Length: 125
Image (cartoon, rainbow, N blue to C red; front, top):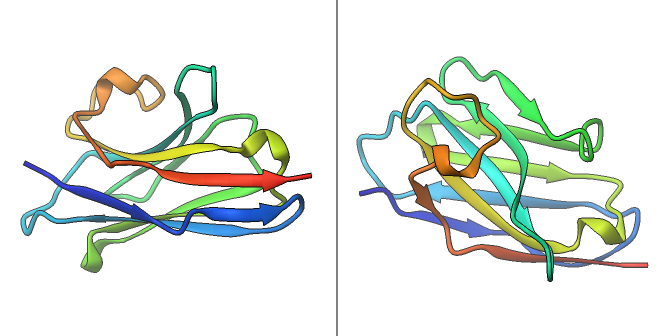
């Protein structure tokens, strides 16, 4: 069992920045990857970014490429999502997710087996 706890959401003006954190509780922690997804009101949950735990290869949705940066701290079992140049369309609940196995890529949410509770990000215009 892996527990993921997100933090760092909030309200920010367009053009601003936020950093989300996701801490994993399990002492022995060796996922294939951790990812961030988001779900806006009335929309399906969508992939944002993912990072392979070792090595730290990263993957991004086109909509956030160049604005968001995913990183991890292996010693702290924590993954981060630095979000810059935020837009109102980035408003959503952001979820951290754990991917156990190598196969299948990184975009599909059914490849992830554990999820955090989500943190709200609201970007005002």
